Image 1: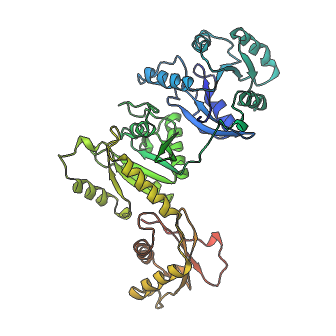
Image 2: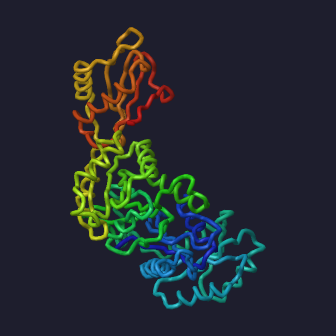
Image 3: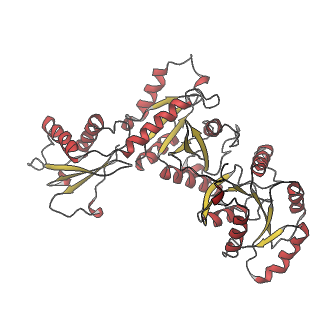
Length: 451
């Protein structure tokens, strides 16, 4: 039996995403006064008193999507409701019952899953009389306010009552082996790949730019292992971010990169590499994340362009990231997708590697002998020894007599040597310089970005 799903539904602007973020304890779903912001299902795993469940946020029922995606949004809602162990029907205490609430209630009438009526925005006792008007729907009712943190314990208790007893063994949860963030410009096929991985229409796919607005976590399995794919909104130029929705979409996409183990940066081979691609690549490098350049939709140009030409094109545009591997695939059909995932796992394993100090120092001494550091102010700087102090990313500290005397060019040389001689050949390496007689303190750090 899979993880029980608790699905939040309701008409637009009753605070569904606010309730979702409130229960999760993080700002994951975009909250905005604009109706129809949420389109895809947004999920998060919650543990409460030893019981796991997935909380699912959905789009507003009955909303007319501005990009003509109403049918797709409704399909996402229906899919979520059909798989629910429990449905949280969210309404607005301040507005009272409105006709669209009644329409939602009719849609939920024939569900086999239990439905709990969550009267949101009951910010104080004076709104309770208005909340009582919802008794007409004939559902168990819980008064809450996500804004002022009212009624959370009562709602969580109600949720737990509808979850399987963990002692029965009916519930399981496997921690994902790897979190893969799928990022790129708009319309590069990110959501299509996620649907292929999940083997279902998990994300809305459309030619309309900006269809995906939230960063959405999607669990899938490969060869008996659990993975987490993080679908992200398409990145835009900073000057194109004009609405709150655009701002929060970009912010969540960046956060997805930061929490990922590996990042797949998507390109469309029918489009030229843009400034947005380069800015996105720079952000990934700044976070020291293992990365794959993924050329999606390869079927559109296969046979008309040699593979080597596109590879050279990528290498010429991202010369500071020559170590990043390249994958050519077709997310729609799944061609080469498994090979890409296997390569992503290999990058993940590389980022976790630790090299013994003795082996690392042999490599450093050989590098120093073959190419000593340049003279600085009439003196040749000395590097005494090195040690790896962390993984993910692999982090190496060099102890020397004068960190300022080791040029950036020489540091890049050492990074290339580490990548060639150690097991970090395709992942970023963080390098710090320390003066030997000083205590190692974070404030003394001079991290070298591989640019």
